[in-house]
Image (cartoon, rainbow, N blue to C red; front, side, top):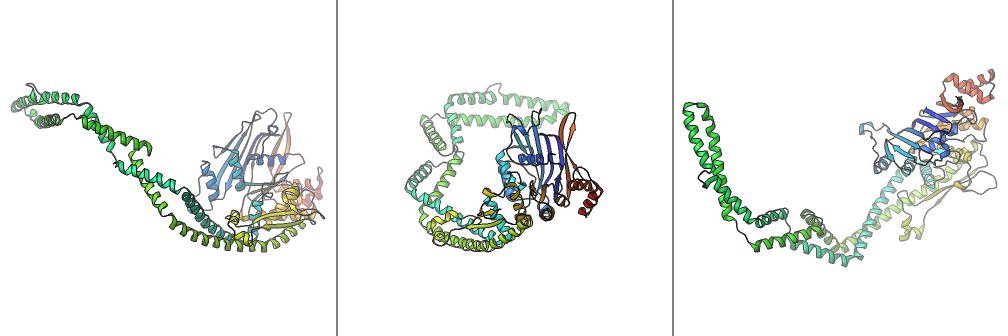
Length: 571
């Protein structure tokens, strides 16, 4: 639901902060007070079209911000995650905890608009993707849901209670589609089989002939460096050996002399005896180093043939690394994958037969479920039509006709391979609502015939007839009371109240018979401050609601009888 809406520098609004409750939120006020500005701002916030004339005169930019509390949804989380938007999801023990989403739009006349979702930059297309989870606006041309045939199927299934069967069909579809995709890939491989076989066999042969070993290149590089620096290594080892062992003043000789002096000193000063062990260790290290240098020098041998062998092997390894991933590890992984791919292709005929059998069984299973679901939808559609038409007559649309048109492949068309193009996780049906508001007019698709007020009332009826809790969100009605009054307004109010039990409802109304049902009554008013007109919103307590309902009943001059009537309405 929408918990908070902040609007700054939009048309007549300077700074406006509106808090909404769950349930039914009613916005009332004089004609032209700015009620529709608030609805328009909400529409812009969730991705609606923005024009520069919405910016308040004299302001260089405007801001709209909304805080939404949304029930956890895997699909919603996936949408946000794919866009890189972080949302703190509730823990498993807190399944009823709502997710909070903050949306902010910064609007500028020059068109440099910015969108932030949870303080992260986002795109307008992402806003449109999120809109079905957040807000559904009806009125003044904003029929985001009603005119979308995809929603018609959802409404019909919500009414008919097909959730379990739909889930079975969806699972069967995914099984069928998985087998179909694997078989398509296998057949695509088959078409390229001979060329692919040659490529794989060549690559496997080349890599196997290369006999790569992890770390081999590093070992060869070290040996190559030794061969290239033979003379320098020989000189350094000989000189080092002489300095440590052979020369008259070699290091070992000096250490032995020092040890002898320390032993003599220790006879007179015992503290020097502590250094005997350290000097002995130094002597042992120097001796070991000297012998290692001598052995290293003796073994040094320059071999042009070995150097050439190493150069050739390193070139071979470098070539294989360059072709197969940049490292020996990557080349060996490529070899393993290629061998596995080759085995798959060589056994593709057997796997194709298996997949064909599995695909046929999955298709039959899906079709069986989809046909049953189709029959349930056809059965429910007639009852749904009658229930909707009864609801329409209750909201002053007695002449309206409503039809549910369901199209689906049948018989040979369903059995034909081409018929599978219409398979979806929701079944094989295409559902569209047709409507006529006037006697003598044929029913036509909703988007072509329903006006703003008619569409708002129709959606109100559809949502209350169907199980609206299947897709709870914030539902906004801006023209639901157009052309009605009295008893019909009362009926509309009852339907709004019922819908508000499962969805947050925001409704702009001029009818006291509707306003009486508000859980949260907000009065929208204009004020003139320092020569500028601005819009404000006030949350009404019970006494203020009496005054507002009395104004709606009688006009500017409120009478005592109007107040009594208002109190009766609130009872």
